[in-house]
Length: 196
Image 1 (tube, rainbow, N blue to C red):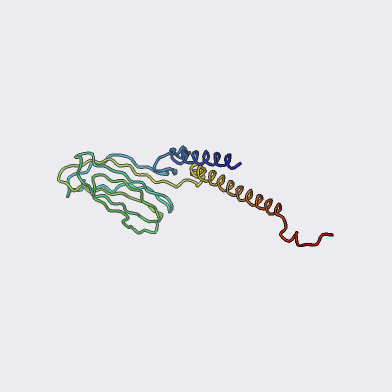
Image 2 (cartoon, helix red, strand yellow):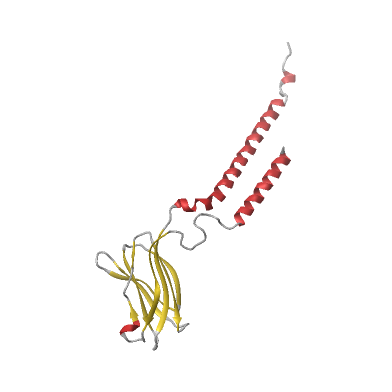
């Protein structure tokens, strides 16, 4: 009985280890943004030399709502390696404008949690004397339902439930065997009792 149980337990733990090390095959895959993309802006921007009107672009934006994420990616393509000033401003429905991000980099990638409803506008400013070209990808993502992640968590819920069940079964069997032993023991007072 004990040997069979130990074999089963070892096989179960080995299976659990293999599942834990295996890559996820859930419905949402391994993409960094598994939610629903609500709005996208993709393109290339050419900026004129610094100090000119063409050195700045602040013409478009994306609508965001609390709980969503603004995913930002840009890279300077020509001349490569040059920094560009980048910022994001929110134009709120109430009429206020506030800056939520300000960076100076040649490559930038970040997810910004949206905490206030409004119109999120990126702005790039050229910092060099010549022209500059960059490629950008911006999008607003609504988080997925919790059910999308359920297949990943099942790998932990099911084995955990099985281990819990096996643990309860062991405790129950031990308790039953202890009761049997107690029933088989002779009563220590029996020899002292008078026999009729």
